[in-house]
Image (tube, rainbow, N blue to C red; front, side):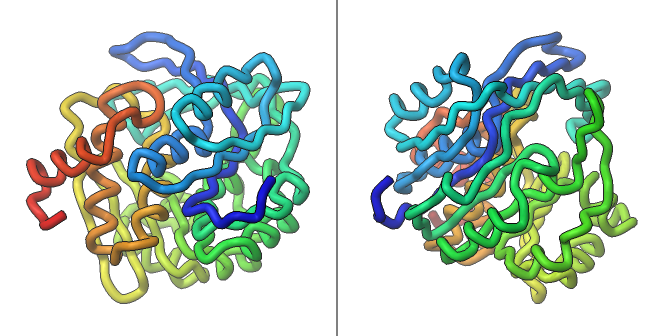
Length: 298
C-alpha cells in the first residue's frame, strides 16, 4: 500500500446479512460498516480507501467497491462474519441479532503505511479491533471515528449480548466522532433522553457525539446540540443507517462545521434508507434532498 493520505479510510469486517422485516420478509444483503461508509463518502467526492477482512467466496463485495472507483485493501480469512438481523416491529431501533460465523480480527499490519484525514472504525462485535489496533489508527489520522456497536455487542455462541465496555475510559478520549444509536446510548448511560445521554457520553471523553434514533440524528460537541430529521420516502434499508451516518458525518467534518455536516448526513442517510444496501446515489441527489427537505444553503 502506498503512503498517500486518503480523505477517508473505512475499516471493518464485511458482513453477510440475513435481514428479516415484517414488510420485506427475508433477504440476504452485503453489509459491513466499512462497505456502507465507503460508498457514502465516495459519493460525496472524497478520496476513499476501504479495508476489510472476509472469506474469499465473498470477494464480489471487494470487486464491486473497486468497480465503483473505491480503492480497497482486503485480507481473506477462513470465514466471513455472517449474521441475521430480525426487526420484529415497525420501530427500526428494535432488532435481534443471531451470529453464525465471525471473520478473524484486524491486525496492525492491515493498516501499515496507511494514512487518512479521517479513519472510520466500524466493527460489528467485540474482538474485531483491540486496543493496539485502535491506537495504531489514531496515530494515522486527524480524526478518529468509532462506532460503539463493535465494543458493547458481544458474541456468545450464536447469540449477541450487550455488555459494559471495559476499555472505554482508555479509548473514548482518543475518539473525535463517537457514534451510538438510541438503544446503545441508553445502555451506556441509563437514560432514554437523547440530549442527556449525549451529554453524559461526551463527559466520557469523545470530542463529538453522533447519536442516531428513529426520527433523525443528534450531534453534541460539549457546547451545542445540532439536530436533523430523516426524510426517507419509504423505510426499506434500515440496516446500515448508523454506519452511513458516522461515515458521512466524518467525511463532511473535513470541510464543514457540525451544524452543516449534520444536515448533509441526515439527507444522505435518508436517501440510503429508501433502498437496501449501501448508498448508490450521487452528491447531486443529496443536494436536491437538502434543497427540498432542509432548505439550507448548500
